[in-house]
Amino acid sequence: MNTFADANKKFQKELNSGTAALVLLSILAGADEPMYGYRIAKFMEVDDENVPMMKQGALYPVLRSLEGSGLLESHVDPSVSGPPRRYYKITESGLEILKSWTQIWDQTKSFVDGILKGKADV
Amino acid sequence: MCKDVNEYLEKLKKELEGCDPALIQDALSDAEGHLRMALEEALSDKPSFSETEAMASIIEKYGHPKEIASAYRAIESRTSPALAVSRTKETRSSWARFFGVLAEPKAWGAFFYMLLSFITGLVFGGWALIAGLISLSTLVFIIGIPIFGLFLLSIRGIALLEGRIVEALLGIRMPRRPLFHNRSLSWVDKYKALVKEAYSWKALLYAVLLFPLGIIYCGVFSLLLVFSLCFIISPVLELVFRIPLDLFGDNVFTPIWFLPVVCIAGFFLLPLTFHLARWVGKVHGKYAKSMLVRA
Image (tube, rainbow over all chains, first blue to last red; front, side):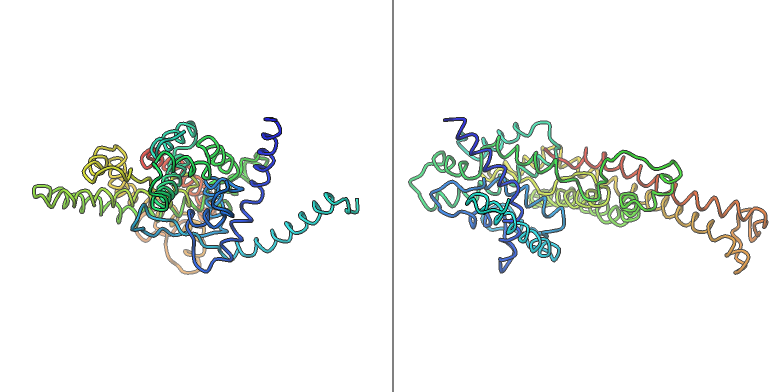
């Protein structure tokens, strides 16, 4: 039973590592203003009672990696209630890559859906 | 299970043992900011919750130290610092490698750092010296104590900013987030930690030393650049514009037979300057890392 749960966990982790960057870019592309890590993590919570699909702590290194690649830019603003917050905003090249990644995602999704439903042309 | 944020941070630090200190500082800063915000929100939403109970549900969502450490390790192994060149096997000839340095972003980054260090050395070092002396002299009055604390905080800000410049131009991984003091500490304890921590003094020493270093770096590399460019265009300068290079004394033109030698020397001196800049940049990057990384 444990092996089954472990396999599920591992599969979810592998899926997340591939999709986290796409999800984060998409959230920031749709945001009206720059967002900080905690707010992004809260935005991704589907149901407050459930454990999120992606561990919130795993979002931060992805945000930093996207910033390092020039797809996001950030600035630090002081906060009255705690440490200064780093606000992220999507860049022009981030928007461009999001378009192309969304296409790839759509293709992958329809391919996997097709296979799972047994309708794929293979 | 972690009872509070500090325990979580300790465990995360332990899980990240052996990683780049700059990465550890970033991971701790990310975790601390998030966990404290989440804890504050959880306790205001459900005041009946104890801190330990709130932490359990927060960690379940944020991830256990082991999971988070592995996420940072995984991402870091895929992300190289800015301008870092991938370590592919060198197949170019010695000549191509020697002159190819002029096309390497890392060498240009290091060269630009050498020139920029004049300004950063002047600003950071000047601030460290002048504001340091002023704040030290105010210590005889009671008002001097907070002024000195503010000065040390400004030095930490400078350390973080210089770290970003070092990473962008020299390709050495440096902290991208400041590390905050435990918010549960009193102001007096925070002040004591600020003064006692070796990091504050190392950052201060770095800022002071950047002042002479910046002048040396900028002076040497500007001269090397000017010399190499003048050598390269020496035939045009002397034969067309009749401007002597003064290689052999006041207003003496270089013998015509020697001009090609000077010109070729210039073509060699230019890439040599960039090789030197890259090497000095590497050494300076290691020095900056040893002085400006706190974890």
